[in-house]
Amino acid sequence: MVQEYGLFIHGKWRASKGKRFETRNPATGEVLATFPLATADEVNAAVKAAKDAFEGWRKTPAPRRGEILLEAARILKRKKEELGRIVTSEMGKVIAEGRGDVQEAIDFYTYAAGEGRRMFGETVPSELPNKMCMTLRMPVGPVGLITPWNFPVAIPGWKSGAALIAGCPIVFKPSSLTPLCAAKFVECLDEAGFPPGVVNIVPGYGTTAGQYMAEHPGINKIAFTGGVDTGKHVYESAAKKMIKVGLELGGKNAIIAMDDANVELLMDGVMFGAFGTAGQRCTATSRLIVHEKLYDQVVDELAERAEKLRIGNPIDEKTDMGPVASADQEAKVLEYIGIGKREGDQLLTGGKKLAGGPYDRGFFIQPTVFAVNRKKRLALEEIFGPVLSVLKAKDYEDAVAIANSVRYGLSSSIYTNDLRWAFRAMQDLEAGITYVNAPTIGAEVQLPFGGTKETGPTDTREAGTTALEEFTYWKTVYVDYSGRLQKAQIDTAKLVGE
Image 1 (cartoon, one colour):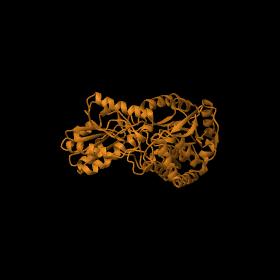
Image 2 (image 1 turned 180 degrees about the vertical axis):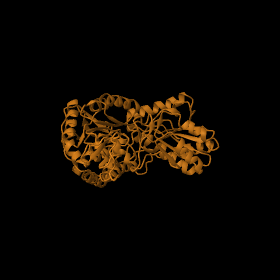
Image 3 (image 1 turned 90 degrees about the vertical axis):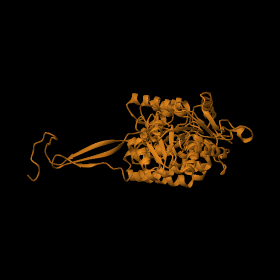
Image 4 (image 1 turned 45 degrees about the vertical axis):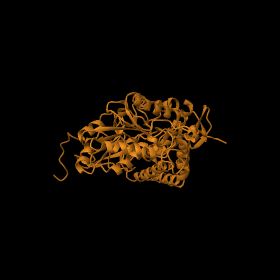
């Protein structure tokens, strides 16, 4: 029997009046569960539940909120294997990465729980006697979370953990490709003991449930991760309501390989950065920019390494790369491979959909490597699949110019044993993250995650202490205990002690 899920509103699962849709395993085609397409009235009910819960949740002391987050982390840890297998079955990343997806949520909830006791403001001296000045963080109110399919537990974990510790109830619209991961995640939060209305989930499509939420007058902040075009639409909707919006919109991440790079270490990093999660990460290594002295050696080894990757069912521990997430995703990646061929890029390996046997039931594409001209589309546009573009650079300055030539700025990397190049790259690369001698992967939860340019037009920074900035506003407080009217800047009264 295929399990049928409903909506989670005000602490209870309830039936929906909306049409239903299926979620499937991208490796096997198996139907995993069905979910409702939340209607406008149902989104409205979820927002109302969040609004009704706001006063009680914001008045709950932050350390107490942290205790509930910590309990959620314990539950997620206990269920890590089960959830990791669901991530792999529904999204398609290999099982080790499925477990890692859940571990990110565990780590962030553990970290965010501690932020309940570190919600620092400032206390500063006043220019007047017998007067105290300080700042407080205040929750923005009910928030809408719109999350993608590629990290179906981790990204909801980042966004919800920060919102909840800040005192904001959430209305959560997960990707329609991974609603089962979202439902299982919400079940863990419910078990942890969040009050009714603090956590709500409304499955559906972005054009319906997502749009209803983005435009709803009861939502005071939207946090969105996804594509640039959709992000612009969310940005416009938020601007019309004059509310806060957080956007994380993808990348065209580059590794620079200098002529003194450790090639073996570089190859290990490129394989994981480019083909981990089948290239479907915002931080995926989409470009490899190689110093001309090292270029021929790297190109030869890249093709050899890529051809040895084991492609198959991601639940198998021996599999190196699973399928892409959907038929639409497969079509998009194959279209870009076709663009590369038509524009004259040199196909070094891969470039085909895998067929026959178990591959016929899923969306499997060979790990693909192109040698690309820096002005071609494969060098400039986000593909979001297992396609790596290799570019040749004359020197450090040329490599940085190529790296910075795209409209994104999320993650970046340089492989070198020369500290001078490493420290220059930290300053010169236009990205929110820079790695030295490691691939363009994500952030540890205690550090900010986000980018610049079209990756992060709202200066969104998830994780780390900056995560609270997304869901709070600053309130400045003055306490005058002088017992008389004092006027800052124009009060000429003598100071106490004179």
